Image 1 (spheres, rainbow, N blue to C red):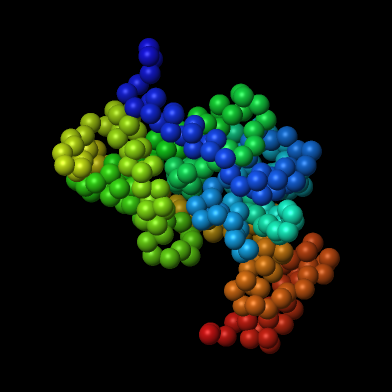
Image 2 (cartoon, rainbow, N blue to C red; image 1 turned 120 degrees about the horizontal axis):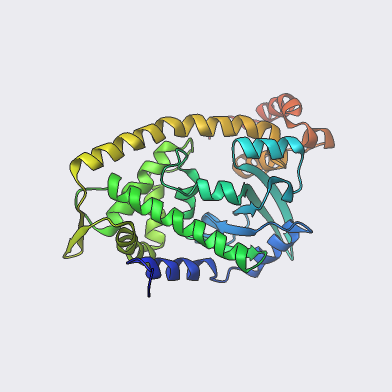
Length: 317
């Protein structure tokens, strides 16, 4: 096909199939209830709820992509904060049939989604997320669908480029993905079990095995392959330069995430309910929330923390 680069057709087909693989009806009904009258460009579903299925304590993960910040109902302060330091995160609960489903919902504009999936961005969070399997569970129209698909493809290509730079001189294709996720988890301020990145790759071995080489072909990264061992032909000087660029991203990663945590104290819609659920999940202690605590979680936090301390929530088991 004229104008199609090597590997492009394979990446397009694989990511398109992934985006439109059916999910649980519980998820689609939850999303319809979540959206109400809002008309974003699309809703993307990813994370542990996609990998492991829906259990009683599953926290679903969604990204809502909007055309402009005002397309998602929230305060002006939240819109401004999302424009300056994306994404904003919200917590939502909804009963679907006999199930009480919970979700963490991040909001990005399409312009931000495009910028944060490009290789030059200092923020690794978004492209690292969307280089993993994802489902497009709601979209406004075909134009929106195409735009979101292009962003997901860009995220996968960005991840593959960094995998070549950060991975071993030679190894299996899975070695490069494991090296990539090992580095991206280190950049973020997240409490994760050791080997979390490898567990993601292990859950989708065939998918990751199929993706890497077509991505390198499309990116113009030459490689040698023999007996399931691949060797990207990257000049040592270029690789050292890429490692220096990654060091800059590593130095920016934690400050960015700390700033997001501080921002969340003022913009995390449903944050009090989310915190109460997490406390109950990990300690078994129910945290009653008054209307005041829901509206002003920072002001209400000290007496709640004191009550939890009295009930032994902070004691080691």
